Length: 189
Ligand code: 3PG
Image 1: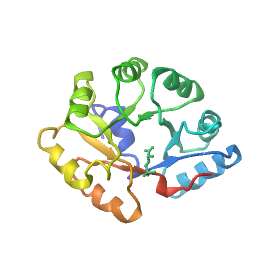
Image 2: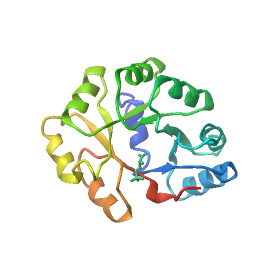
Image 3: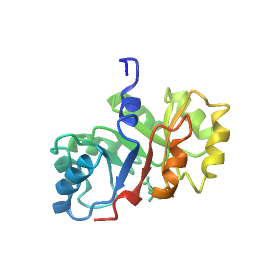
């Protein structure tokens, strides 16, 4: 791995699976992070879908080896709050100019959701080439992502949405897929 590899790509190469976490019980945050890190999943996406999500990010970050980011980030205000809480990367279900520009200005690794060629072109216009393919199965699954590889061979993906233990390996076999995300790894806590 060289210094030329962007931080977002280094992060995508750290673990094949990024657990998408919905944490309702703050007391579970640290033990969960410890368990995931020790089972080979150091990159953790905490979704902003619960009241304690920001606190969970702050707590999980204290766990040795954990790389904790925020998911379900939909606007710059939410992004700023997660960065204040200590988020080390940002995942969004889709891409807007506002959020994309804010993430670039904040110089934080950013994985925006894309589902179509137009979405990818939007990202490329902003200078982005690393994407969450979302919702992966509902957007056409592996055939859809393979079809997008032709015109967008320079892009790298983390498919997420509808993936589970039984399908993850098939996604990971694609050349332009560095990792997959999913909530199947950990049920809501
Ligand atoms: C996400 O936020 O990335 C998705 O909700 C995860 O999708 P899954 O629950 O189908 O894994």
